[in-house]
Length: 95
Image 1 (tube, rainbow, N blue to C red):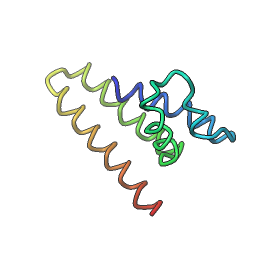
Image 2 (image 1 turned 45 degrees about the vertical axis):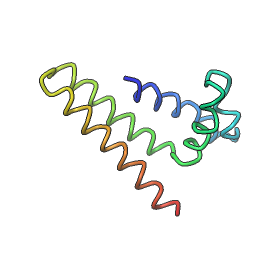
Image 3 (image 1 turned 60 degrees about the horizontal axis):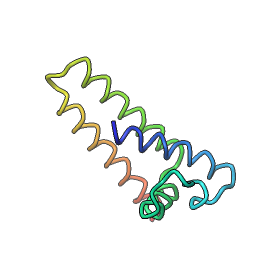
Image 4 (image 1 turned 180 degrees about the horizontal axis):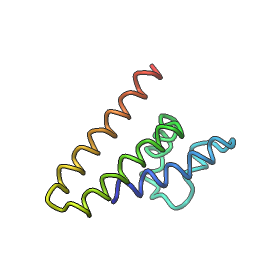
């Protein structure tokens, strides 16, 4: 749930960046001041399509974990690995 909320916030902030707002301004006052530089850096690294893909992965994990509680930890673990791989693939392309 926390990862899903984080990526939802990134999605909204990334939309602002895509409209011309700087990542630092898009983070806004709702983020704790010590997290702002980290979130701003994430906005620079994550494109809108990759954020949307991560949201889809996390949404599916939430649904699977609620419908099949016996595999909840596996579904969430797999989703987190997929999001981590997605993050890594963006870094390799940007380098």
